[in-house]
Length: 346
Figure 1: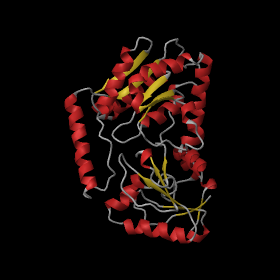
Figure 2: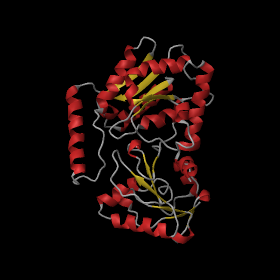
Figure 3: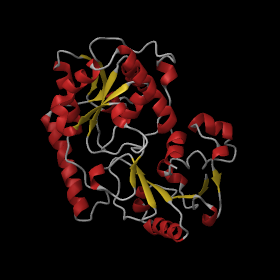
Figure 4: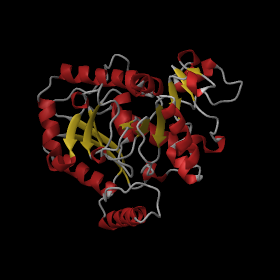
């Protein structure tokens, strides 16, 4: 694909560079072999042109958050309008946990991990969290280590806290941000008032109490157990992926932003998400029938979380579960990696 992007990216804000551009905005000594190894993409598949009129696709080089933060929205608007005059589509990115408020344009696609689908924002589409492939370090290519158990084995390793004091603190912060957003003092979109650490704790308790489930939980009071040293981070990372690998299912529910990184980590590891849908975006809904890859539980049905998992499990043989695990791994490789997703979106 022929891509044009203006050179008003800022290397000091590299975390907000449009994800597909990151592998190509590098030092001169960065080779295509380095690119394939680090990002899984090759320069042979993408052609960058210097004139917008020659492009098949135009990319806004930085996240909308950057233009808001640096008071440079005029640069973004100018590019979108120039592309519209030339009959070109523009890809852009609304980053972070919350997303910033932006106007609608007919030729604009806004990829995002965050957000709420029911708001029906024109051109907004789900984007995966792009993660490193860790499968070979923890699992076997033939899936011979996929757990075999008559009772569903559901795993979770992460932060959960049932304390009301923590929940009230979390909700108060959201309400404060929402008020500022509504009166124009905060550029971020308003959020659902949800105490997510308590939500996770309540769901985990429900699963633990279910007599037909086997739970495999490692609960943290702080994000990544509050570790600070590289050795501690390595240890908690190993525990995290070992927990996924030793489970058939993994509870995946939103965090501070309305999306779950764990959801993509579970698919990458070839396991089955127990996915609590909280009105968030999922990638490529027109190409992927998500309800065929996960145990789907709508937020209004969370009181039935355990029963839905048991029913899903009892309706499938061990062979069927194994095949689904393999399909989930392949789904991630084909459509949810950096290269796979943007080629699938084109």
